[in-house]
Image 1 (cartoon, rainbow, N blue to C red):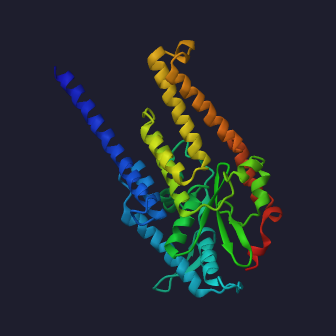
Image 2 (image 1 turned 120 degrees about the vertical axis):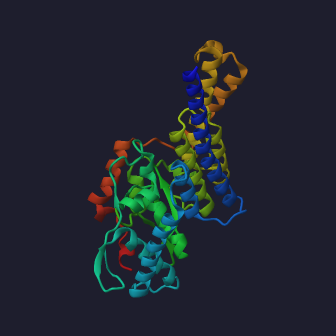
Image 3 (image 1 turned 90 degrees about the vertical axis):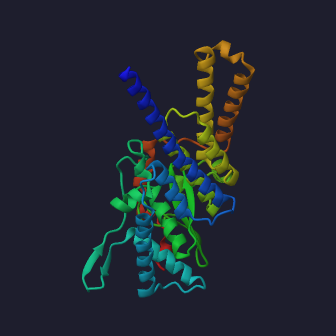
Length: 355
């Protein structure tokens, strides 16, 4: 009898714990949705914090997170004040912010504290360990990047955009297969790319050199577009959904669908949202088929609802392909990323370096 009572109590504790964890996700969704609906002040920093704090079950201290960002912004402001660019166009003030942010992210800087002590500021570097967070989803986080000074093509541009927003500068996220980078615009050069994994300014031909950016994908705005602030928040919602899947691998897909559907409202061509939606729908159909018929067999296909669902799923995958999406193997991505460093002279935008 005591063993039975203990087992029941243990199940109740587990259920309460799971519900508490899911509460963080619902709360994060509501806060990001509030920004998207213009009911709350839009803040990319706050959206990223909500995503990471949900996965960390409320243990990410906002005071520390915000203070770390504030220190980086203050360093950028100090660089702006104490150096001069050769750039002389009307938007010089804005370009000075871009240059300072790049230095904060990628340059070693000599800093003197209030007591006159000198020390070397260590820039952020690329972490080749678990770059997609397969082993540990926290490797995708900005909070992990700030704590270790090592990040990837997700956390590095996210931190850059946060700092730009806090500094009052415009920074646009942009996508390539498996990759995120920054697009800026200035009066002298027009649009140009800022690549934070390698610390250079690559021309568009490097992005196309991967072989996985189909011309249709560019025409349909899957890749290489400068994202607006609402689209950037949509990226955060998909990150929230992916973290939820990691935290609750046996979930019913309803929360994930809520996230991706909201993301697609504001960023209809976000291919990662489309893929996650299709994969989630596929899992839901498979589970229903197994429950109803003990497998995906001919008998299951006689069910009109299931049949319609499978046809809709096929249509979703076909649409993703027709838009120009091609899956880039992970080993190919690493080779492509490495090519930017090894063939720097070939792909670097020389005009930006002369400012």
